[in-house]
Length: 108
Image 1: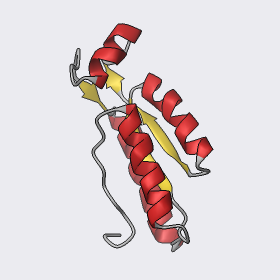
Image 2 (image 1 turned 135 degrees about the vertical axis):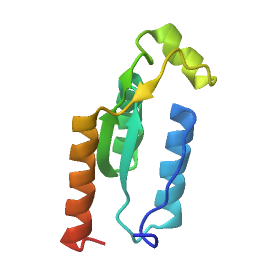
Image 3 (image 1 turned 60 degrees about the vertical axis):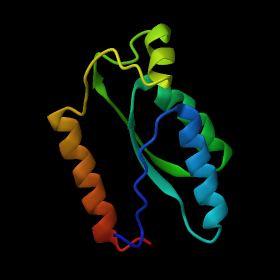
């Protein structure tokens, strides 16, 4: 997995787009897939980036008191987080199952 995975910590929805476009340009002969955890607003906006560059992946909605208003979303884009963001236990279990399935499939 270390050779096939590039972990990226994103700060804004624009940074997500930059990273995906950069990966597509850097690895034109590879299938680019993503797994992203973010608030619902970011996931919706990121969907546009993913569709534009034709990448596939999974967006996992974070729970907690984050991005529950447009004002909170804008603040989060500047690093101000109104509350704790969490991946719920059931969601975490499903994500890990999907990662295991992908790994065990031998997909490259």
